[in-house]
Amino acid sequence: MSQPPRIFDTPLISQHLARRTELGNFVTDLVLADLEDRLTALIRVFPRAAIIGPDLDKLPSFGQAASARFAFERYAAFAGEDDVPALTGDDYNLIVSILHLQAVNDVPGYLARLRARLAPDGLLLVATLGGDTLTELREAFLAADAMVYGGASARIAPMLQVRDGGALLQRAGLALPVADVETHIVRYPTPLALMAEIKALGAANPLLDRSRRMASPALLAAAAQAYTERDSDPDGRIRATLEIVWLSGWAPHDSQQKPLKPGSATTRLGDVLGQV
Image (cartoon, rainbow, N blue to C red; front, side, top):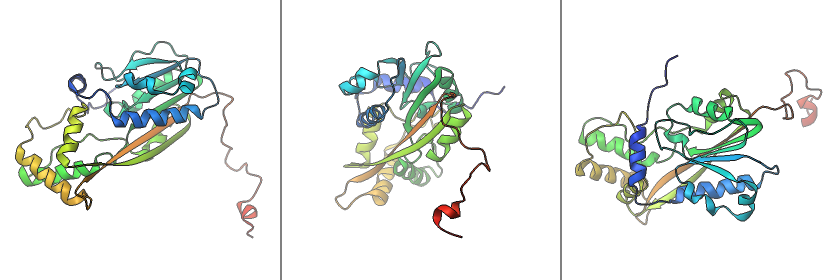
């Protein structure tokens, strides 16, 4: 069976994360706050839970209520060549993947392997950067590359579109799939300030098929100019889109709600709407 193409340079990602100057970041804070809200809304207890992600040191920021109900086993991501850390056993009631999926080469395989670790009626929750994240920076570099080098280079990684999330969950064998998205607009003093933060967070270009040519001052200046012209506010600050896609699905179980068979309805839609 053919292997999926490798998109990301995993060793390079590990190097970037090891060299980063900021251990925490507002993106992780946003995701963990949202995760706590989502977990608190769940009524059931999850006796065995695991969380995967690059910033697990931030996990204690959970409130006491969530921390008491979910005693997470922690697995660091981006630590080696494998896309999925070595989870032990196949009886997890809850697996959470935080900001890991966007650097995974084999997304369907990744979800299927996590699914295989779930107990029946176990829940998989995934938070990943969505396809519109940094779209302004992507467009600015496309314009700059064309101006300076006469052609485009891949500088921003491809990311998951929310419309594809449900199909990916179903393909992995998960029931009751749900995909939703949260969009945030973040502002920076200049495009160069945004680029500096991306580098400080260890999120520089992770693509295997990236240009090995260093970004020249002329390229950075052209990208900053294109960015400012297209996506700046009246006060001079620039906008950056941050999109968080959430995926959730359950390992199948007989107790779960099942869709009705086609043709089994006993009430006409026209009757409900009061129409003939």
